[in-house]
Amino acid sequence: MEKVVSGIRPTGKLHLGNYFGAVKNFLKMQDTAECFFFIADYHSLTTHPTPENLHGNVKQVLAEYLAAGLDPEKSTLYIQSDVPEVIELYLLLNMNAYLGELERVTSFKDKVRKQPNNVNAGLLTYPTLMAADVIIHKAAKVPVGKDQEQNLEMMRTFARRFNRMYKVDYFPIPSAYNFGEALVKIPGLDGSGKMGKSEGEGNAIYLCEDEKTMRKKIMRAVTDGGPTEMNQEKPEAIQNLFTLLSVVSTPDTVEHFDALYNKCEIRYGDLKKQLAEDTIKFTAPFREKVADLHANTEYLSKVAAIGAEKARESASQTIKEIREIIGFRKF
Image 1 (cartoon, rainbow, N blue to C red):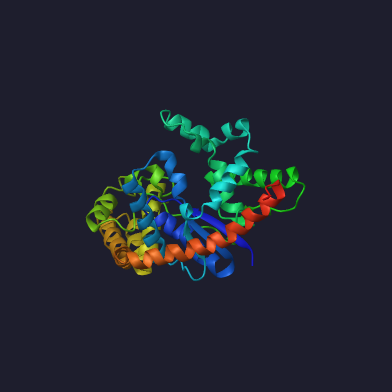
Image 2 (tube, rainbow, N blue to C red; image 1 turned 45 degrees about the vertical axis):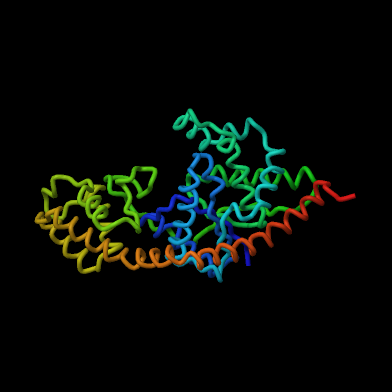
């Protein structure tokens, strides 16, 4: 069974987009591969969170992903900072990573533009920490989005460089995980593009936000003046609303509003109200599970401890072996 590693950003917020994208695919992966899912709290330090935010976000995201269906008995679910071996490998990889190649990484250049007053070394060496997270388990596959393709290529570079420098065939060269089918793309509420936090808070529907906020966001979703011809093609903003409706509502509800649109009789206010109520109903069980898990600190601690033990068993073996390869030996 091949090993797969994927990081989870400790933002504390799961929205419909990543629930139907990343999370649904994680659930498939844990049944077909040896999976390591980690909450990337070290990575979050590049934005300097407060201790309260850091701990709270890690707890929230752990509860959310468990509520979404990640099974700690099927996969290894752990917190990055509970596995110190990752940082040792991060340091060793940095010894063979070059300033020029790190400065050329697109995500680093984007961060420099967006946060010029916080261009820290962690941002620069983000690709080496990401590589350490993956290759420490000798993973063959990594599920990555378009924005992470360059970081995947850097992982491959670092793994090859280690093998070449020490004349070994030790690290597998990781490749992108192929889900075997088209990913479900959930549109945002701003009229174009996909749902995501980076597009703004108003663009995404978070599974744990309160009903009032959900209704307010959906009622503000971008629309147009309405159809002017029978059976005309829907513009992107309107098709986005119908796509969301198809995810959370019954087929006959979608058919009802589709027929009204085709007859030029649709009222977007009614469509949005229906979408809001169906979204609230769809996400209610998830919110209840998260609330139960959040209150059960003992269970969350147990999950984190078991995950850390499993992850460290894998990581410590790798560190032991690469120390021998590099030449660190006790007298």
